[in-house]
Each structure stands twice: as C-alpha cells, then as structure tokens.
Length: 140
Image 1 (tube, helix red, strand yellow):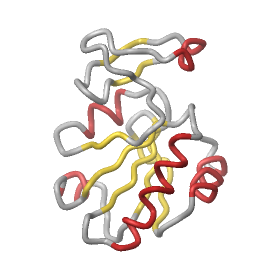
Image 2 (image 1 turned 180 degrees about the vertical axis):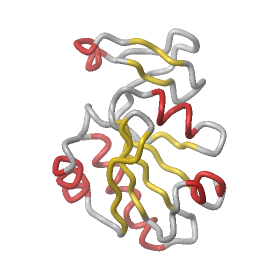
Image 3 (image 1 turned 45 degrees about the vertical axis):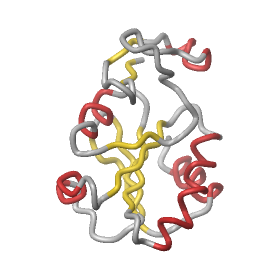
C-alpha cells in the first residue's frame, strides 16, 4: 500500500498487513495513519489524494459556514473510527483553486476519491454515523 505523508508529502510503501501498526514516514518520521482529518491546500491536495492507495474522503468547507462548523467534529469522529479510509479537509477560502477545479458549489461537500479520481460526492452536513454509512454504501 502506498501512503503519502500528510506532513512532508513523501510517498511511503507500507505492507497492507502493517497498516494498523502505526506506520511512520520514512522521511520525516511523522505518523502516516493518524485517525484524524488531514488539512490539505492547493499545494498538497493532488500529491496526497492521488498518491494514497486507500480511498480518501475530502470535506470541502469554509470558516464562515455554520453547517461546516457543526459537521467538523462529526467528520473528525468518523475519521477516528475508520482505518481503511483517509479523511482530509480543504478550506475552500484558503485553497480556492482546488475548490474551483473540483466544482465545489455548495459547502459542506464531501468527495470520495479513489486513486486520485472522484468516485462519489454528497453535499450537506452529516453526523459521524451518516458519514460512515455513506462511505460503506460507496464500497469504502
């Protein structure tokens, strides 16, 4: 399995059977599989999403968005319960190019990526159980 380090963007190879063993980046030593959302921006988005072998669900949000703020702890709770999907967040105000490129028209919007390609999307605030159920319905 290939995992991109959220800290330094280095690609790391980790045997599938070792994913639950707390793998660390070979370059910077940071954890590769923390059970928390990773903050991505214009510079880090493509490398992380396309270089990570696991499905990646991205929460596109903005600081001024009330439903986004309400969903943030639910998204983090879902991330803490899922070891086979990577969770990431993109602030559409700070990473405008990424939001535009992916056609984000309303927030919060979650997009599921597999090998860098969009597999599914859903808009609106959701609870942790709803997020996990949606991911399961998408085969993630």
